[in-house]
Amino acid sequence: MNQAVRRLGIFSGLLILFSFLVMLFFALRSPGSGGNFLAGLGKGKIGIIEIQGTITESDLLVERLHKFRQDDSIKGVILRVDSPGGAVAPVQEIYEEIIKLREKKPVVASLGSVSASGGFYVAVAADRVFANPGTLTGSIGVIMETVNVQGLLHWAKIETKTIKSGKFKDIGSPLRKMTPEEEAYLQKLANGINQQFIKAVSQSRKLPLAKVTALADGRVFSGVEAKGLGLVDELGSFQRAVEYLAGKVGISGEPVLVYPSSRFPRWRDLLENQNSSSSRLQLKFDSGW
Image (tube, rainbow, N blue to C red; front, side):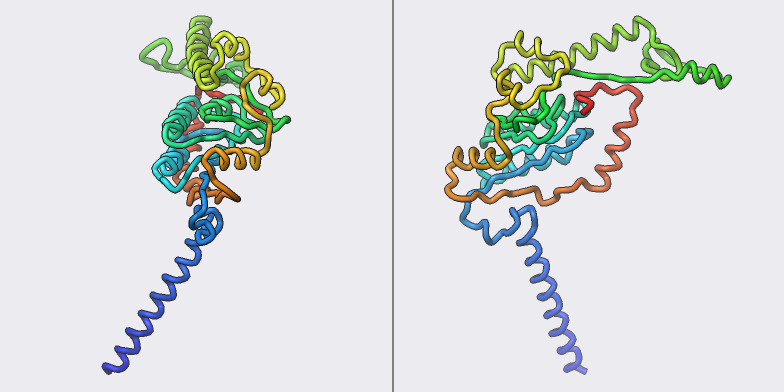
């Protein structure tokens, strides 16, 4: 009996050891370690933050930026931006976190196919901005959209009734036409937030406020145009941005590119994104591209 228990204990121990070695093997080869942890030992590391698609929430990106800021083995960070924009508050939260990151280590932005409106807003927080010649960028501005189905409801003989505590409580309702007073109120709100965008670009790009204001009519620019206007620093690919940052932080040879350990949003984040986009009226830094 004792011998059987002893054998069972040895078998269990070996099974635990095997499981540990398997987990260690995959951990050392995870994307979060730049593809191969062992190969990265003793080499300079550059963190990569991918900002892709419409920006509807900031928690995951802010968390990743914070981790790279605290990780002393990461010598600099590249923002790979391919986004047409998104909701105002998440964009501004990401921008502020990038500014914090810059206080501790260099940050470079590499623009992909589209880095417009909110995508451009977060990119200008970097120390240096790279764009491809054909990158679509800029689109400095704010947009708010609503629909009016009042005519359709009238045609279908459907009546609606709204009970509200204040005259602006159902502003933007699709059930009725917007009043001139409501339209003026929303225009003032959009103009005010647009001024925040203009100020951020002016300060980050070190451009006169008047110059940025003249460009802030929602236009998109090619990478070539953006460089001529001072909106980006250099024309070049992602690899060029890597080479520049590696040289800036003193990395000799090929740097190790470190991606966050979780490169995909959690199911909770996806569900929250769906809920956050269901608001009737939402101001957005969105280019529409």
